[in-house]
Length: 243
Ligand SMILES: Nc1ncnc2c1ncn2[C@@H]1O[C@H](COP(=O)(O)OP(=O)(O)OP(=O)(O)O)[C@@H](O)[C@H]1O
Ligand SMILES: [Mg+2]
Image (tube, rainbow, N blue to C red; front, side, top):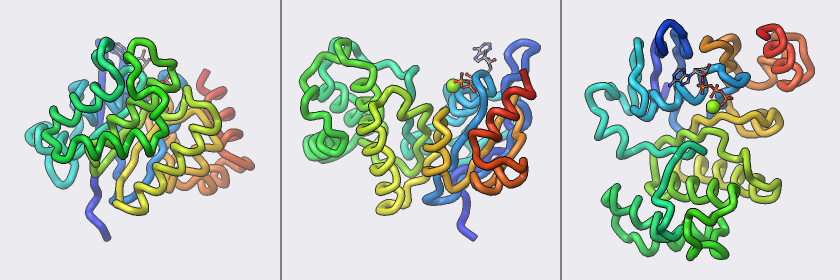
């Protein structure tokens, strides 16, 4: 069996006496797409922020590529990238300038070619010279995705990557994610509130509720376990039970 790219064990985050993530354990295998699902406030973003070393866990461990994030942070993060709405980029630079900054920070070679390719892949030609501050939210999302792809990571953490995209672009992004996984064995952990997207994209899904894993498996397995027709029905049941 392939060594997991990511291994999370008993991960916990407390904010004061509130526990946002409560003893969560899971793995992501090479080339696997894992969906992190759960109602608002379930602990998805907090989990991703811990995986990125942006939030310090209160307990548990995170290993990537067989290394412990607590002790091999720099080596690990070179091979990881992410996109989310909380990302901030220099607002007065253009889209292309921002991609150059990221490429230089990661010490990439062939920057001009890489930037050209990613701009083309994400159909960003129309706004490549726009000042970042002036981007629409969907354009900004595409810039953060471009930033994430640019460094050719081994694992991508995507926090609601398609939330502000129009259906056409969202469709293209899903196709791109699947193609990257197929061609380069990229592993992806992502969140979404779009149940159809979860069903279409995820090899496996982890359902978080109040910081705990309450269900795990393929979309079909989870639906069957709860005696529901699809993921949306499961979501409504679990979310409503918890409120
Ligand atoms: N810095 C913080 N201080 C205190 N509480 C926090 C902090 N960050 C997050 N929380 C709390 O932790 C819980 C989990 O938040 P998180 O952002 O991880 O949820 P989420 O699953 O990503 O939700 P959403 O679907 O709304 O994005 C929430 O109750 C939130 O208020
Ligand atoms: Mg969130």
